[in-house]
Image (cartoon, rainbow, N blue to C red; front, side):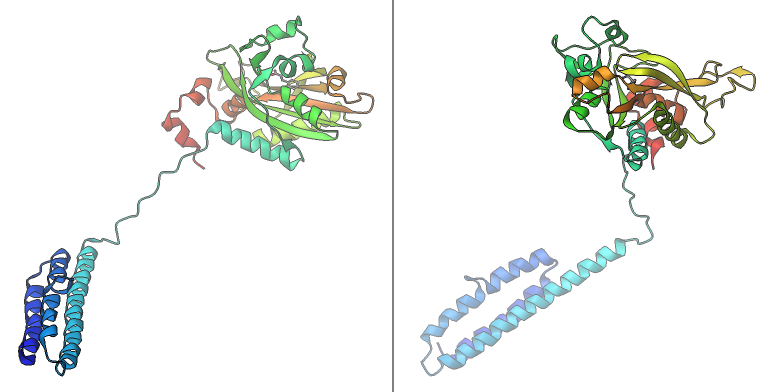
Length: 349
Ligand code: PHE
C-alpha cells in the first residue's frame, strides 16, 4: 500500500465518523459509534493494519498521522457526547418546577406514656435521683418476700399475680427495684424506676399491663417531711402549682407509716361539679388518688443489709397511665394500647 493510500483511508475515517455522529439520536446510539470506530476491532484498528505494508521510510510519517486522526476521532466523539449530556440536563430542568413544595417527611411521635415517663424522669433527675431499671420477669423473692410480703400474707391477694412457675412471675409492681437497687448500692441512695408491670385485671380502668414509676430515697435522718416536700414539689410541676395535695393514711407491707396521696381534681378544679353537673373524673369528691407512698419499713432494710438505726428512707409508687389520663383529660385507659394513629398523632411535639 502506498503512503497516500494509507493517509486517504485515515482521513476518510473522520468523514465517516462525522456522518455517523450526525445520525446518532441519543447517548446510547453514541456507544455503537464508539465501538464501530475506536474499539480494538473497529474501523481505525482495521486501517492501522495497513501500516505494516508501508516502507520503513514512510512508517514514521504514517504513524504520526494515525495518532493525530485517532485523537481527532476521539475528540469528535467526546464533543458529541457532551452535547447530548447538556441537552439531557436542559430537558430535565424544563420539567423541574422549583415552586413545587418539598416533601415533608412524616415523623413519628412519642407515645403519651413515654412522654409522661420522660417528664417525670426529668423532674426527679434534676433533684439528684438516678434512673434504674430491672426485669419484668421477676422472682417471688424480689416481688414479694423481700418487700415484707411472706407467702401466706393476705397482701398477696391485693394483687392478682400472673405466675410463670411457682417462684417466677411477672412483676406486679416496680417495688422490686427498691430491693435490687439497695442490694447493689450503699446509702445514700436516691433513684426512680419506671417500667411495665402486670396484673390479672382488665376493664375500663384496668389493663393487664400498665406502667409504674417507683421512687425511693435512703439516707441519714430522712423523715416524712422530706417525703411530703419531694412529692408535693413533683406533683406541682406535673399538674400545676394551684393543684392541692393531701396525704391519707394507708397500708403497704413495705412502708410504715404508709399513705396514699390525692390531688385536687384536675377537671373540676376540686369543686366536684362543673356547671352543676357531677364531675366524672373525681365522682364529685373533688379529689383523685395519684400514688402510694410511705417510710421504708425496717423489715425491708434488714432484708437488704441496711441498718435501720442508722438509715431511714421513703418510697413511693405511681401509675403512669393514671397520670397521663389526668394530664391529658383521657377517659378510657384502653385507648393507650389501641395504637390508633389519630389518637397518637395528637401528641406531636
Ligand atoms: N407498690 C405499690 C403498688 O403497686 C405502690 C407503693 C410503692 C407504695 C412504694 C408504697 C411505696 O401499689
